[in-house]
Length: 130
Image (cartoon, rainbow, N blue to C red):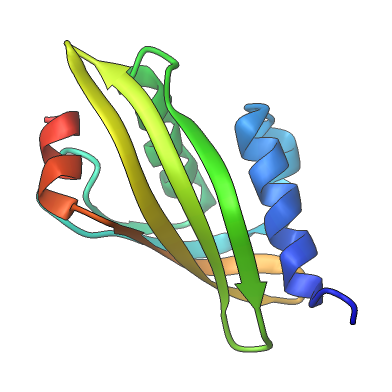
């Protein structure tokens, strides 16, 4: 059985994100991407467009002093959805983030067009960034 092609799109995005290679990341993000991060923290909100989404990603690294580290557990895909199961760690202002999360994607024509971050404990996630 071969992997769904959307898995490859996500794997390229994950490799680029982990390497802080925004040019490579831009190749797999649609210019009009919509990104959603629930909660009440300083990163929470709906982001429209690649520039706004990438600025939010940069805030992850800025606020954590570069310690934010996502680790992939698994990625599942079909024609409608791609779901990445991840774990993140980071340090900030004497606080530690050590939490599972998922990102649900819509991918079209080899580009990520929408993403929803879903954290295991949204309140603790918000507190970490606050």
